[in-house]
Image 1 (cartoon, rainbow, N blue to C red):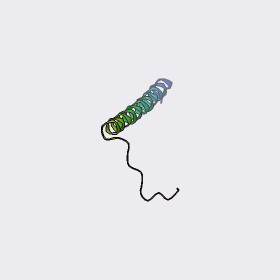
Image 2: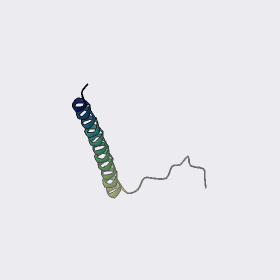
Image 3: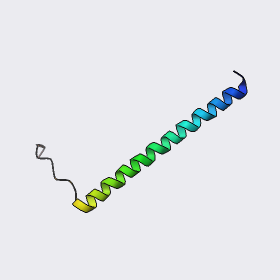
Length: 54
């Protein structure tokens, strides 16, 4: 491979990794937003009845 091809491949892989990080960040933000909307509507989740740490 030529240097130009290697540079292009590196830029392609770096861009792919960058956009994958952005996509995962957006997915986590949407999940947190959805959970917040559920909590605002229904209130916080009930305590776990099997929790015996009291």
